[in-house]
Image (cartoon, rainbow, N blue to C red; front, side):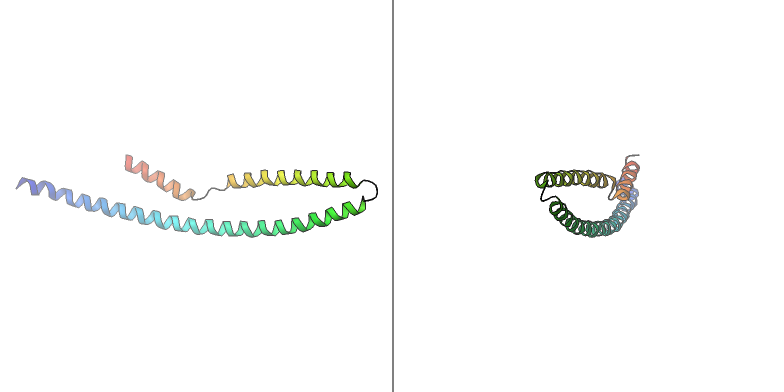
Length: 125
């Protein structure tokens, strides 16, 4: 008779633990879905802006290059072309550095990570 009495108090605590873990997983899943939607919106907006910038930049650089080469065609043809190539290379390098900086600034799923750390601390204590 002692064995059933000992197992009965464990049963409610196991059910409570299962219920708590279920609620924990449910809240993490809903938080993850919310942050995924935010990340998707950010990525779409980022893509649209980058596409517009790329198209306009290409058109500008083509027209600018044609204008410079036509203007300097008679006297400094090769110098003008090399100067344009050097300036374009510099602009590309600056843009890449800025893009890397922007990518490092964005912290995706930060709330989910914070919640997981809190839960881990609670479970360990």
